[in-house]
Length: 291
Image (cartoon, rainbow, N blue to C red; front, side, top):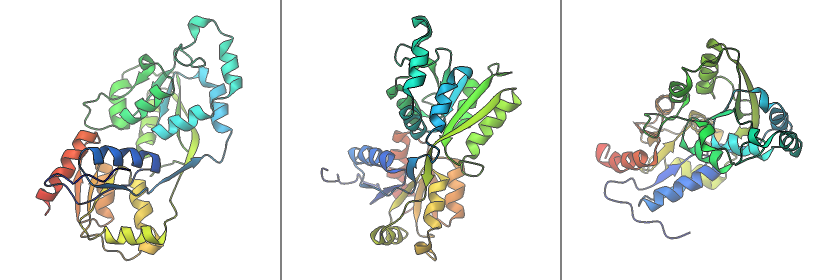
């Protein structure tokens, strides 16, 4: 890895990216290219679902759904990873005009729904035709369920079936935005089913990581949070019990996450739109706002 660039004037000394490892590495690279000193500190581990056949069963019934919502890029990755040869063969027997050309096996009338650009990128990489994807616009204030519903909520959902692809065991509290979306669909007359295709787990920290977290509570580092679950995994770690976060600083990418970080005790929490440019601008300004 090349040397970390010197941060621009006004930028934080270190940016701690707390997304799952693969996502965190991407964000670290992007921030470093923008002149920020950044490091990955994943606060959520991603692993295959314990029910390894759930995604396969969902693929077999995919043609019965009007829409399939993916809560994240990880949901896309693990769902398409389990795309079975049997389901592909079954779809291949249909007339050619009924099969999506980019990815044979996708029902051509199925709408693929994403809450933000990262999930859209994952769907495109998986071969989903752009014309079958619904998502908030690039200029949306937030990339979340509410923003997605503003795009698709006026459609006729009466009697239609919707599949939500998410992490295994993501119930109320962890996936409140997704549950909100499900309630909107149900109120509009749709039937909503869920399939868990991966697990989100609290990571196991090394002693060095624990020490780094303690140091980052006071050394001016800026924690970048894009999940309330990540905040909980950090502050609930027994090895960090008693840490005073009042001198810690954070940037959070959604109002609900801002509330969670403040409730956890952070002294400085700044909200940012989740787009990379906005995050960079927020990081660059946090020093002058909170010296």
